[in-house]
Structures are given as structure tokens and as C-alpha cells.
Image 1 (cartoon, rainbow, N blue to C red):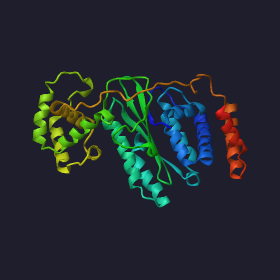
Image 2: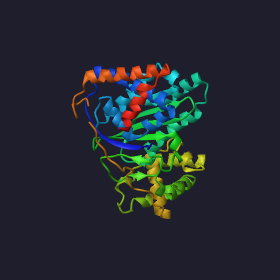
Image 3: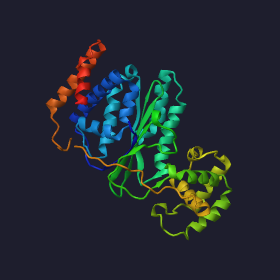
Length: 352
């Protein structure tokens, strides 16, 4: 299963209450069916695949091509399993806006109930958000963050950023079992309908730049500021990298990184106060001094479209929806009793 990024246009409105209530029931049944048949890791693999996630949103009857599919599907799943999380060994934390900022507390609370260490889970939640907001500078500011983890400590992240200029939202997927590095190609599949120049500091091509940026962060602030002034005379061949940082603030951040003396790029981006502008400025200075050019390629590689609540490809059929919920619940109950014929039938149907 692949992890990656998806771009979706912003749509107004929200799911009708009756539809969301059904989404809650059906998503809970889907999750339970997958966990029973394939296990918790399999669910994480599927939810981290942007294509599977999009198809799941369509099955649940939501828009196929809007930003709301992310927030609504995640919200329905979180609501759906909240009372059966302990039985599933699966926990969903975070959400949209202010709720996303409570993710660390939710992880800690669930981990305490499980008597497991929450430190590495909270770190994974925070660093994934920092990477997609600071290191992938594509014009999308994060406003949604969901962290899904199992009692064994495996996890997946689904987060979304918004670009108010082009009216698109971009979704980012992470999966712990396929993650080789937080700072080098953490996304192995990227889905996007709108591409544009981006500073991608987690691209493999940016490895030298990451090293130079880390070294610069350990230099005395005055030396770096002196070199920064020369950037103003550089040709504007990288419009994404406007030097729009306040020199006074930049000096304060550099003083902090100098005192911290980060041993690597991953540690550097975790320093409080180091944000997109700081990394952007250091990347420019690194290019000027050492010719270490970072990647300016948008990480998007694929685009897609499917169809729900707005009536495309057809209006939600309530009778069919109810039958689906009933079928899955029946299959789950029979499987718990040792009869897996209905889930086997679903498996055969998927192969067809």
C-alpha cells in the first residue's frame, strides 16, 4: 500500500446530519470487518493509501472530489469506533482545527489506558506535521491532523492543508511500517490535480541541501545574517523562495539554533521557532554559498477523480446504504461466532 498526497478543491457546505450518521455506522462496520479479516496493520495500510481513502469516501456517500472528504471521513471513523476501540486495539486521535492541536493529549490518554509509552507516538504525530508544514513548502497550511495507532504501536497519519489562493486542499498520508526516514521521501505516492513550484526539502535530491542547512544553523547568527543580505541581489529564478523573513526575528531564531547546535536536519526542524521561512532562508543561503540546490519539484505525481452527496455520479440511495450497513454488521457478528462465509464472499467479490 502506498502513502502520499492528494489535492482536492474546496467545496462549501457539509454532509447532511442523516448522511453523517450513516457514514459513522458504515465506516465502523468497514473498519471492524477489515480488522477481523486482515488485522490492524492492514487497516493502517489501506487508510494510508490516498486512492483507497478516496474510494472509501465514495463508498460512504461523500463527495469524490472535495476537501471535505478528508475531514468528514476521518470524523466519521473516529466517531464510529470510539466505543469499540479497545476491542479493535485501534485508536483515532485528532481532527480538524482546534481538535488537531489536542492530538498529543489524546494519544497520551489512550496510551495510559493501554499502559504503553506514548513518547514515540507523540513525536511521530508532531514531526509529521512539522515536515508537511515546514519542509514541503507547497503553499498549503495544515488545518487537519489525524493520528491513528494500534496497541502494538504501529501508526498512520492523515493530515490536510489549505491553499486559499487556488482554493485547493492537499492531503498528506504517512504510514509507520513503510517509513524509512522522516526527512527523506516520507511520501511514496502523491496525488494532485494542481502542480506548481515547491520547495521540497524532504526530496532525495535535497540531501546535500539538508546537510548544508543544518551546518548553517550551527553558525554564529551574525555570519549567517551577513550572507542573507546578499540574497536580495539573487535572480528571481525560484519564485517560491521569496526572502520575506523579518531580519530581527531571523536573528532570534538563529541564536536559538546556534545554542541548540542540532546534530542533524531532523533535530533542527524540531527546534521551537524553526518554521518554513527559516528553512527557506537557510536553503537559499546554502545554495548561494555552496551551490547546494534543494528540490523545487512539486511532490505530486498522480491525479484522480471518483463521484456522492452532491448527486454525482448519482444521489445517495438510502435503502442500499442501509442494506450495506446491515450486511457488514451481520458478517462481523457471524465471524465473531466462527462463521466467516459472508466475509469470504466479500473477498471473492473484491477479486471479481
